Length: 145
Image 1 (cartoon, rainbow, N blue to C red):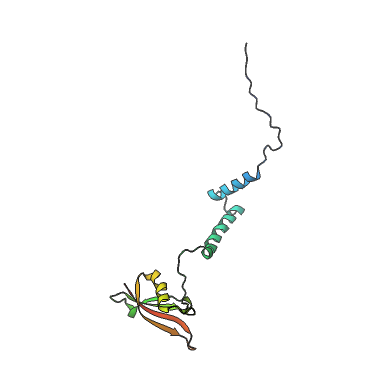
Image 2: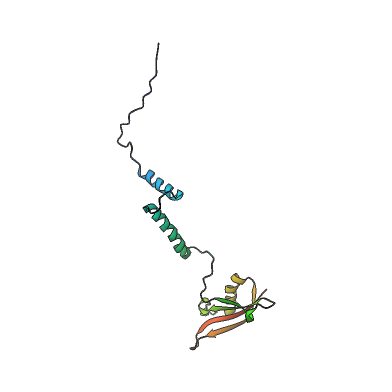
């Protein structure tokens, strides 16, 4: 008895042969984004770059990166040179201080300065006003502790 087994590949009779499922195409696109496999100048490359730029410019409005955003904030050593005690003069805009709530201005100024310079003690505070008498900024003399 000579028996040979013939293995035959079954014929594909379904209409889906060669068709790609929508989920497979989505996963391939995501994989291409993660592996950065698209050519420069292609639509997907432009989409990836746009998403990165959006993250860079929009995320600071929603995420707290613990950075100080002070405009008009100046630090200068007293007399041009820091003293032996490390005395500095800070000039802080009045908009950074809430005087309407009746809070202690000196304490608010200290809370603004300490994250930048560390532990300090305020030795003097001078209110800088414009010609009409409105407070523009505060000059604050501090010594490092």
